[in-house]
Length: 254
Image 1 (spheres, helix red, strand yellow):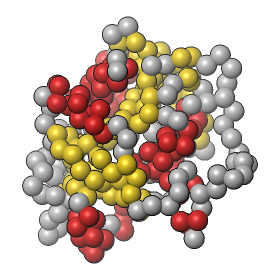
Image 2 (cartoon, rainbow, N blue to C red):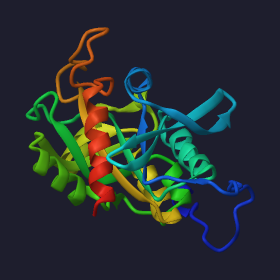
Image 3 (cartoon, helix red, strand yellow):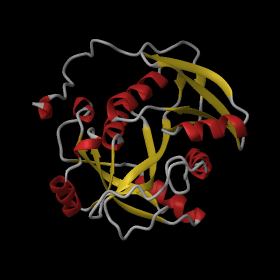
């Protein structure tokens, strides 16, 4: 069974080969959005410092200098297995212990305003990846939620704290399961959070994250809440990169 998958008694068959003389980076910022990636490359002085390869192609990693600090940046894949795999590959080519992730989520509580930042505090493990990095449990605590909240409060960004439901199968978010997760106190649904936290715990990495509330599931019919090409308040809203960049700056000062 999947809940019996965690094995900390034997070695992994395949491991990431860490490069020698890797560049030291203060923190790595990760987006899921090709729109955000384009914005960053066009509006910041970006130096390509590393890359990793998937069957789908090469993913470049860039360095951005900000407030006398070195931050890495790259675009990841959607979904727990591929997203966690990119972190594993990244720590094989750059030297960093802090990762800032930001992306969209589905909203499970219609009382939450569109565009309000969601800070996950716990994640329901409805995916397979985390069970290879941590012992079985229903939820995993998002360790640095309070630090992300400190930053949002300091910068006066509107935010809400709550549990998230991490699921692998976008098209199998059923009404019954949605109601179960809402009863648990989940206010969002995503596809990576629980797995990233489990992997980071296992590798000794610090994980900081926040969500943008995109589509609404807490409605008689699924509501995308934006039209094609309309990015305000979604994971493609480039303003959130600037929030992530300043969050990275904040955590490296702690």
